[in-house]
Image (cartoon, rainbow, N blue to C red; front, side):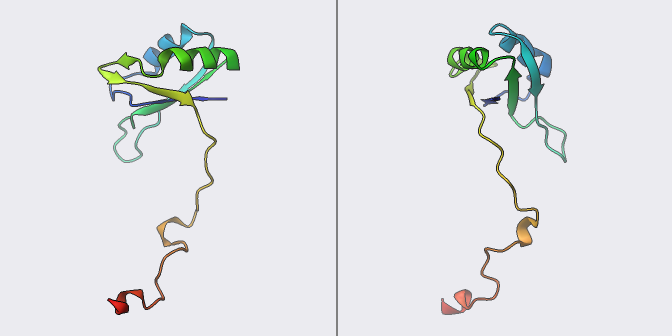
Length: 103
């Protein structure tokens, strides 16, 4: 299981997140995604802890807590969805229809 931590300040560091979650158990991993183009943090993180009991305790204690002037959103991370690797040119569009001609 993994914990999703949302509404983070862009100033938060991996070490600070590790420290906060370590109060609830052993932290295995902290991941702070960054924007590919700017390198800026994206405002959320994922935290993995040693046991599900520790993760549940951290979620219970930190969801809704204020940190860096922001109310944290902390919950169980959802599994990553498979993304269409064809990009925006993949199906689903109305490229060959007469939709635009009707109006």
